[in-house]
Length: 65
Ligand SMILES: [Zn+2]
Image 1 (cartoon, helix red, strand yellow):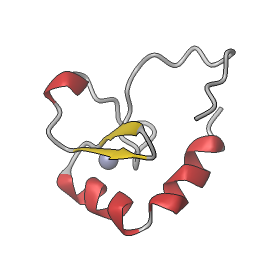
Image 2 (cartoon, rainbow, N blue to C red):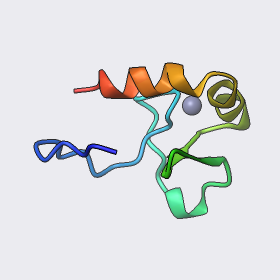
Image 3 (cartoon, rainbow, N blue to C red):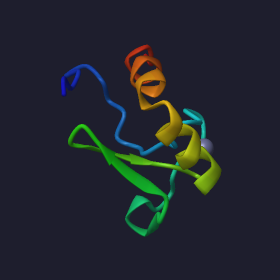
Image 4 (tube, rainbow, N blue to C red):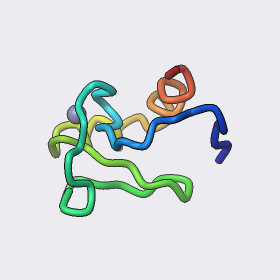
């Protein structure tokens, strides 16, 4: 997984909702490890969406600033 050095994003966001910050990722129960990377979700619904088509979210994430 390529990590952009210029990316200052330290906060954790829901993989489905880029604007939804996961305040306490360590307490988040909706997580999914995909291709050696851990993803967090605000709700189980988001997790289900991710599991249905993770590739879609891979593409979306790489498009983030
Ligand atoms: Zn979400």
